[in-house]
Structure formats: structure tokens, C-alpha cells
Image 1 (tube, helix red, strand yellow):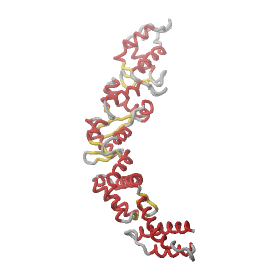
Image 2 (image 1 turned 180 degrees about the horizontal axis):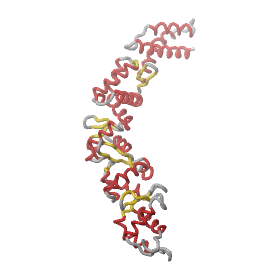
Image 3 (image 1 turned 135 degrees about the vertical axis):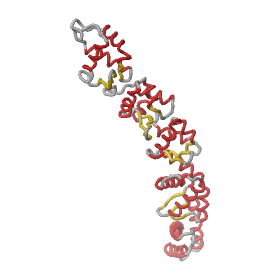
Image 4 (image 1 turned 90 degrees about the horizontal axis):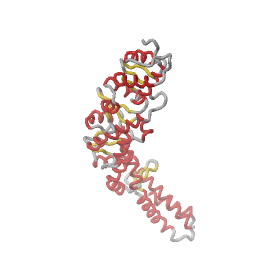
Length: 371
């Protein structure tokens, strides 16, 4: 040690400043000369040594790290880390990560991160863990290999989409809507990580369904359901036309499922639970696409059904209203109800009961309107 002690406050401030420039890392072998120059150029006073050797720097750093500066610690010989996340996030880190993702794909490796931040090989795992802990990165574990996408905090700070968001947005503009081709997926994730990442996205995160070379993005299921509803709408409407525009909900679900299976083999490629999700999405979309409504236990093609109900009600009521001399509303309603009870308007008894009630209700309205 020199006769006069090292000004550890001054040395600590210099080292922290340099570490912050390097995303928290201080490599003494890289910056020893700079530390020495900045220290010797500063005012240390008569009671402190004004010059430093490399040995004095190393010895003093061991005293400073973790003691006088709790956020600066030695992580291995000659390497120190200042916790840049302790006093608020360093804007340079999210900006650097954003540049990395923009210049590559939505998935990167630890080696790409190491190169981007100019880290030693032995320090990349330490730094990546810090980034994951602070929601800057999102870890995708695939057995012995790990990949990383954009963390939630990074998205907030930079506007950068996370992987799931990117998959969903890309799938919305693909054809068919909601499904990505293999090459489209490779544009989003790292090509050399494709097989591992796809397996993880499908099995662990349930972002995707592998459809033998194409990939349904679950986050775009509503959009996919609408696309598929439009594809099968003619077949579904044909079934409704043959059934009298109304059928039981279980029969309707069977019709939708069969129509899906005739158009695509997606239901054979996914789990039972997910099969139900797909059918539900298509049924929801059919309400908007062609006006199929579920009313209790009955599904109905609303517009033609309403026309049929109106026509049947007129067929029953018009003859009854031809002579109102001695008639009353209650008598006419009874006569109408008797005639409607004999109607056969749908294939199943459940749907037939529903339609008879609809016709009877409209017939009674028309009778009331006549008086």
C-alpha cells in the first residue's frame, strides 16, 4: 500500500461511472488505465495518494465493493458489477435491446445478447438473469438451450411487441387469417432456433398449434373463427334450410363440427379442449357472418326464420279475420292455437315446439292488431 491511502470515495465514484457506461460491468483489465488516468486527474487532497498502480486499484476495489458501495460487487476475479437496476432502469439497456430485436427477429440467443453488450463469455448468464428478473427479457426454455424474447417492461418502455403480440398481429394479416405458414413464422423467430422454439411455443406456452407445417396462433383465434365461419357458411345455411331454419343446439354444434372437418383437418391436430375452443369461435362468428342465433336450446337462422314465422302466422290468421262479426280475440286465439298445434315446421320435435310457439305468438299479435 502507498504511504497515503487511496481515496476510496473518489475511486468508487470513478468505477461506478465507468461501470454504468458498460451496462453495469467493470472489467479491470479493460479499464485499469482509464481508472488510473481519471483518478490521477482528480483532486484527492494532501492526505490521499495522488497516483495509483494496477495493484493498488485491485486491492482498493476489493475493499470498496459491497462495503462502501453496496450496489457494486465483485462477481469474479477482476470483474465487478454495479446494479444499474437498483436506482431505476438505465434507458440505455432497453434501447440497446430494442436495437437487437429490431435488427434480428423476435427471438434471440444468449450469444447474441453477449455480443450486443460486449460481455465476457463468463458473464452472459449473470446478465441475462438480471434482464429476465427485471422484465426486460422473456425466457423461452427449450431443454438444454434457452432463447429470449421481449419482456413486458421492455415493451412498456420501448413500444416493442412481445413475441405473443407479434405472432398475433402477423397472423391477422396472413392467409388463412389466424394461421402462419412456416416461412412466416421463421420471419418472426430465429431461423436456427425454429424447431425448439416452435415446440416450446406449442407445448409449454400454448401460443401455437402445429398444423403440419402451418401454425394456428391461439391469440388470433377469434379472427381465425371468423375466417372459418365464412368458409363454411354456405354448408351451414344449407343444413338450416333443410331443417326449417331452426335446430337444437347439439344438432347445430354437430353441423358446425362436420362442416369444419370437411373444410380443414385442424380438429384432428389439436386437443379435445382446444377442439371445443375452435368450434366455439366459429359458432360465435356465424352469428355475425350469417345471423345464426342461439335462443335457449335452439339455434336459428334468424332472418329467413322470421319470414317463415310471419308467413305461417298469416296463413293461420287471415282466414280467421275474414269475418269478425261474432268473433272475439280470445276465441280467435284458441282457434289459431288449435291449427298451429298440428303444424310440422322442423325436423326435430324440440325445434318444432320452438317454431310453433313463435308462430302462435305472432298470430296472437296479429289478432290483437285486428281489434
